[in-house]
Image (cartoon, rainbow, N blue to C red; front, top):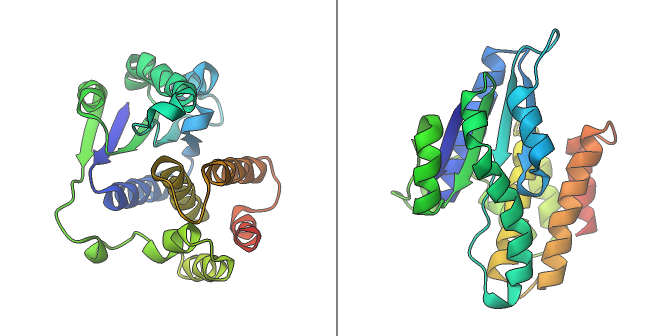
Length: 230
């Protein structure tokens, strides 16, 4: 079954999606949880998301994080084609995911109208959050964190990560915000980060999460170490 989170208010969409995940896991502690980023989407990972289960894990909760790329310039068409492959695979698997007993949460801020229509038709529940209040008034989105990354200030970034962890923010949520910002830098450009550097930043964050999942350094410590390397 698909739960769709989308809308023009990127910060609120992301915050509400991660809050939903936290509540679901608290309600059902034995629910196995996985988060898939756009670059990890494939036939194999989506089949696992839809069909996995068994004796020890009856159900999965899978968060598919920002699966659809933003519109890019003509000079970046090759990168677009690469990203469209993963998003088209997701569209092909919508029926399978919708009929699954597993909870599939699709987090897709600023979803194009045509794609939104397809996903809404398959979703069990749709959550839409459009911008209706100033960003400064939205609670739950760590603007200082993403701004520190955007400004390439390792000291500020480490401090904001440390503060957020002490305040009880989940490392997965912080990683999600940082990777979202890395993509944002790639798509919009930056005076501080070159296109090549922002792309490498995104890849480093993907590798960091994967290493943590494989039993390496725990994610919270990896994020602090990452901040000092920026």
